Image (tube, rainbow, N blue to C red):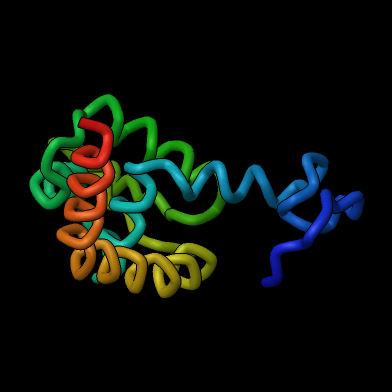
Length: 128
């Protein structure tokens, strides 16, 4: 992808306000979606397993995120119709293709968080 020099009037690029792909970017750019999708990469997972794996996410946010990912075809929901309830989530083929893109992003964040922190500290120190 190249960054245009001037505003793009072609509605088929993400730089155009009218581009429908912006909805896809908005969906996957949420903090929780960026964590839930790779967390499902290993296969079917139950809700409580996700809660344990993704520290800091509330049940409400996990439920909302999963619902939106299911709605958009990235995650599949399987209700085993049992007592007690047994619901599992797993990536769809579309979700797997996205996960392949997000896992390297997660790895980048893990490798570079200290560099980002150092840059913030240098920036903040230059204004004091």
